[in-house]
Length: 198
Image (cartoon, rainbow, N blue to C red; front, side):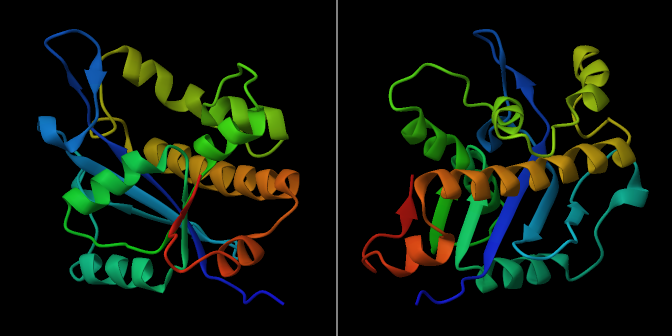
C-alpha cells in the first residue's frame, strides 16, 4: 500500500511588464514583483493566501512569513500547480527552495489529450472537469485597464487567487482519476531518481 503524501497546491500572482517586442511578461527577470502566494494542502479545506507586495499595505504579510512559507514547502512531498514552472521560477527567484516531486496539471492534460488539440488553460480545464471555476471576471476589467495584481484591490486578488488554487487541486485529482492512479501510488512507486511527473 502506498504511503500517504503531503500534497501542496500552489499558485502565485505577480506584476507584469510590457515587452519591447510587444505583449507582456510576468517573469521575475524583467523587474516584476511577486504579489501573492496561495497554497492548500490536499484533504484540508483552508487555503492560505499571503500578500508579499501590494499597493495597499493592509495586505502585507507579517514578520517571519518567509520562514513559515519555507517550512510549508519543506513539509510538501508533492507540489501541484498549473504551468508550475512559472510558480517554481518565482519562488526560487524569491529565495525559496523546493526539490521534491512536482505535478503540473497543464502538462498532465497534454498527456491525457493524446494529440488532440484543446486548450490547456486552467479556465478550460476547470470547465472540462466540472470543478471550481476561475474567477477571471473579477480581475478582467482591471487588467484591461492596464493594472497588474499589485494595483487590483487585494480582496479581489485574494478571491481570484483562492479560486485558482482550489480549481488547480480539483483538476489534478480529476486527472489522476483519468490516469487511474493517486498521488501516493504515482510518487511512491517511481524511482527515487525521478522527482517529477508530467
